[in-house]
Length: 85
Image 1 (cartoon, rainbow, N blue to C red):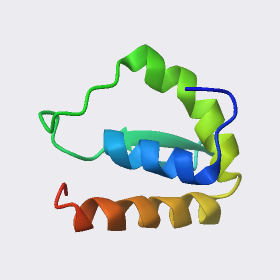
Image 2 (cartoon, rainbow, N blue to C red; image 1 turned 135 degrees about the vertical axis):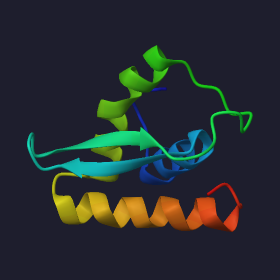
Image 3 (cartoon, rainbow, N blue to C red; image 1 turned 120 degrees about the vertical axis):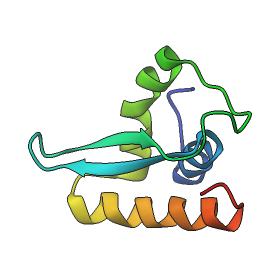
């Protein structure tokens, strides 16, 4: 993932890999988890995912729990429309 990522690209990438952000109240930061079936045909290796998180968090502006929740709802809605969750 390139270092220049805009909000739309970040959301589309999370939708593609079936991953949503959630707020970790212990560390006070956003984390990610996959919510679609593992065999849905989308494969992204773990290293790529882990390298992408800082860029995704920055592009989406997820600095608070409320911002993270808003992004999560957007991604969940798109995945439901696609029938993936």
